[in-house]
Amino acid sequence: MRVGIIGCGVVGAAIAFELSQTYQVTVWDARTEHQWQATGAALGVLMAAITPKLKGKHLQWRLDSLKRYETLIPQLEALTQLSLPYNRQGILRLCFESDELNRWYKTQHVRAQQGFHLEIWDREQLFRCYSHLRTAHLLASQASVVGAIYSPQDRQIDPVALSTALITAAQRNGAEFYFETPISSFQSRPDSDPPSLTHICTATDNHPVDWVIVSAGLGSMPLTASLKQAVPIYPVLGQALHLRRQTPLSDALPVVNGDQVHIVPLNASEVWVGATVEFPAEVGGSIEADPVQLKELHQRAIALDASLANASILRTWSGLRPRPHERPAPIIERLPGYDNVVVASGHYRNGVLLAPITAQKVRQLISN
Image (cartoon, rainbow, N blue to C red; front, side):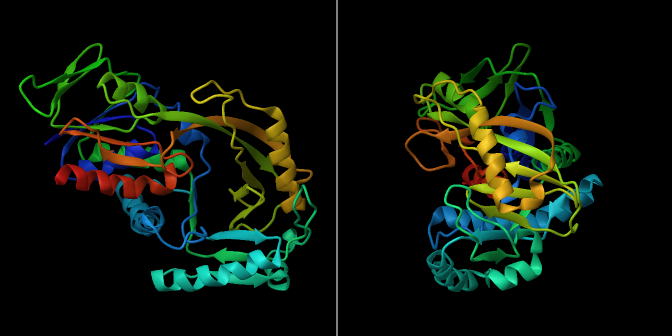
């Protein structure tokens, strides 16, 4: 069976690898091979067990995708001979109110039933493990940290390294990738009801397909619009920083989360800090990165971790996240009106986390 995938960020790459193990896969992307867009702007924080949700489909997707990473990473490393920067030190969520800390006991109990371990730490235990967080406080209210939730099973992965490995592994399975190749149109079988696409058309070729997977992030909306079934997905901008501490800390550090900030350790000295959440003035409108919000993000990170106060800023960056309009993220479903088109897009802030489970859901959709 011939599967055409449009879009090759981390989600498209994961789908390509998953399906290449069984099917003949071809992937197109309008971007250049090293222009990563939303994937390049992500921090790769796999926040699943430490989310406060207790039940629901989307929580189960998070937990299942996290479990898949534990087998996916060694599988990719064995296939590609690449060493992936996969942080297994967990996620530490700082708490600034005693009531907030106490609310986590119910989540801790539910997670234990779901096969995940959460630890609830008071101030003394937090400072004993991570003394550099002793002065952690909220920037706005100056409220001091009262404890933390530690999730040893949550993870972090470099999104670009992961995507590169997924593409390489899919190519080993025979998948073909065409970058800088936008899709110009589709051909369908004229007598089919509902319509069935037969070809994906570029400027130079008409490629026969049995299934079409639309996984192009913000590019998914115009593609589906060309099929008269527009799926509304609009941009939300995020900014992040890459910092280097003056004095190195331990190499084995978890991701620290608090006050809407992630502090992602890369090594003993360097961290990523992110990310802002910036909406356009009107739905679908353009967004410019706001330097005021980036500065506030930086200050909130310093309030959590005082060792970042004199850290050097190595770089800043921003990217647009694809967010579905007036419906939950992500969208993983057949395109209405077509019997061989699947949309797997609009993952908003969880594209990296949900990439493996998205690939499995797409496989199920086309297998059925």
